[in-house]
Length: 170
Image (tube, rainbow, N blue to C red; front, side):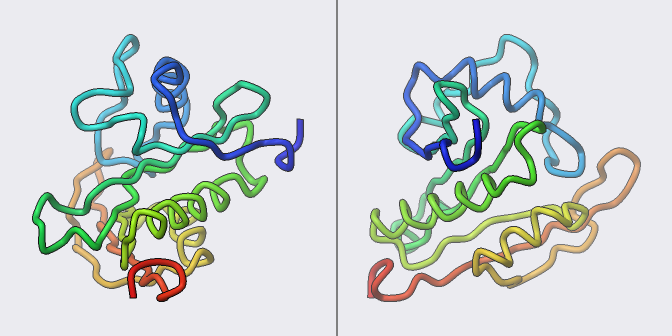
């Protein structure tokens, strides 16, 4: 199966186990300041609902996902959505799926009326930072040595993309 036959679709509750497994196989200190997901832990919970996840579906197999959601729970910030995680199965990396997922998240944010899409990426995640820059995100700030991961201090890079009036809210 090629990346052209992979479709980006909304997640359903039936994707829970596949998403949790993908989270475990794609986890790395280079990508996440959180500890890896324990086996048997559900992906969907009170903080993550199927409606906030898009998946890359390769013939029924979940090979990637992107999570989006509110940047903050403050009404004055409702025009901002945040990418809260992107993962691609290691066997599928380098085929453009990350970009398709990020573009899908931007499209979904625009569909929901967002004006801005934000994200946080670890300074050590060079491929992720390049992906986001290629998708139109710019660095808006850096929290120096925000995390201590695997024995090293790591920057937290804040990036954002302003949606044009034809993409989101004018």
